[in-house]
Amino acid sequence: MEYIQTYNTNVNGDKMKVFFVLDENGGAKSVKVGNQVVPSEEGIQFYVDKHVALQIDKCDLIIESRPYLKVKDGETIEIPDEVQQREERIKELEKELEELRGNQ
Image (cartoon, rainbow, N blue to C red; front, side):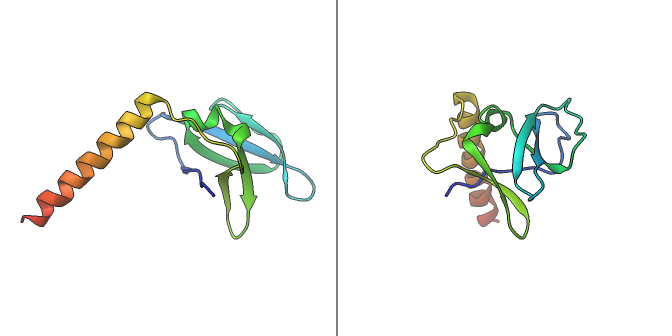
């Protein structure tokens, strides 16, 4: 089961809002995507990476002790090359930083 990284804010403007409208039983009835969405119904809001928002139909809203998103069984979230390269570079830099801190 692959969990989706969600964010509480969009301070840098690089995330996208997804708002799940809830039905009378507390399940997801529909989803609205976009930072200009102004909800008028009860629901749950997350900020996610833009490539995830564009593929939100591949995700399930899970409501347990706290709500979260996961990739549906049999689905895969495609990561654009630019995002993937950035994530790999971040991992490289974090590793280098750990090595530098270890030599202090």
